[in-house]
Amino acid sequence: MTTKMYSNEDLRQGRTDFNQFVPVIAHGDSWGSFGSLPTWLTGSLFNALDFGKDVGIVNYAMPGQLLRDLPDAKKFSKFNQAMTARGAPNWRALMISGGGNDLIDWIRRSPGFDLSQRILRRQDEWQDASLGVARYLSQSGWTNLCEELMEAYVKLDALRDGNFAGMVIITHVYDYMTPRFAPVIGGGSNAWMAPAFEMAGIPKGDWNAVAHVLVDWFHDFLEHQVKARIGGFLVLDTRGGSTPAAPGTTGVSNDWANEIHLTAQGYKKLAAATCNATLTALAQTWTTGEIAASDTPPAAAGLRALESALRESGQASPKSAKAMKKAPDAPAKKGKKTGQKTATKAATKGAKRPR
Image (cartoon, rainbow, N blue to C red):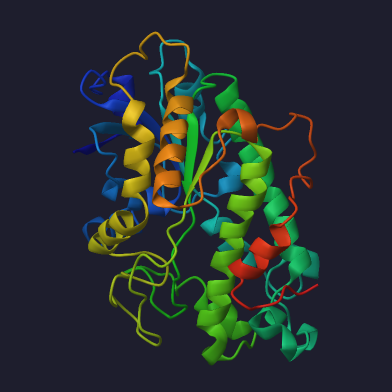
């Protein structure tokens, strides 16, 4: 099956073919567009996805975009128009690639920021060694970053519910990157995470473990906080789907083009290992063109089909949109469930949370 990428200009000029392709809209960062130049080397996760049928994605993702900015109608007016304009396609899903740049922004913040506004601790702030590599991290900073990201998801949820209530929102985690001085090929960047880890004085032998904890915490946030707050939300767990880069390398290594982006083949491998089976089950009820008359919105029916498939395979199933939906005025800090501590403990893989 084919996943065809369209631009906003294609949509505006009527060059989309939604009589043949299922309409999906997407927004986000470089994992959804391309992982920096050269595009042929890095590709993107969205390009690598297989839904089991022909899907056309009108894509607004670009490198460097922050999740906290995605709902902003002024910064992303074209995306907002595509979600709200009369005559817009009946989008079956909103795909979001986001959160990574926001995390990197907080990681890079200087020691002059208050501890609650950065992720990395100064050496004089490190906690007891019994906490493992989590002793290098600010829990209050992580909590505030998550609140910032939650606000963005709540706004995206409102945009979805106000226009395409039957649409499912799909996002992904990231994979376990190796912090290393591997910047964009031919670019002026000096990598993303490694310089910040070095400046913070974190021992190089702990860099990989710190990166793993942060990716696991991000998964925990999406799966146990965002999903509890908004309905019709599917998280693709992309952790562990690729071969990590070797520590100390400065260029292409295994499935990674640079420090935080995979090669084109790496994204295909990741999608096949962690995304495509779930997306194929979800998209069973998706149709091309206009949504057929039905008492059941296609997204909701797709989620039910996915739940059934996951139950048969013994995997954990996502809740239905109706069951997941909470009161719209629920505060962002709510949404923690009984058992979240257990999930969090598992997600950090032995690293205790700092205070």
